[in-house]
Length: 215
Image (tube, rainbow, N blue to C red):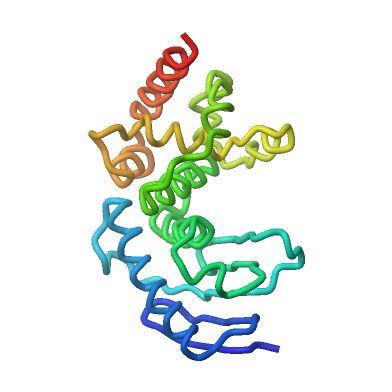
């Protein structure tokens, strides 16, 4: 049974966890503000898209784990307490970014989708990136342009080996953008102009960065 249903400008919230009316209103307002800021970090202005999402906040089946899913229609979070997400955190930023990316670029690859969602998280929160990202960055030499642009979820193969491929995807995006490009410019280049030179440049920059780190 649903605990609370609430509609804001861009979201229909369904809370399946214990939550107060005050928390519902506060969370909805924060989600609307995050949407604006995430769009800005992507290189877009607020109001660039009218697509609304069903936003479900659900109870996790594992008390030690948070998780989420974001697609072109829905944002679905699995948590243990509303207090876990009342402050901006990577889980909500990541999944909300997925929703926006799927609608702005329906053909976006898995690697770029995950890498950009991670990139937005760390740009948004300004937290230090995990050491695991750098520890696994050596695997960038195994990754090709075709893999980056593939819609096959080959990332799971690396994750099953204990390699945090999402961190590598984040570093690839950060290296590719540098201080010259926005996420929008990168994705427009690939999916609107059908040019992949930025992908090639990003791979070269990553390999140079990794060699310098280990040199």
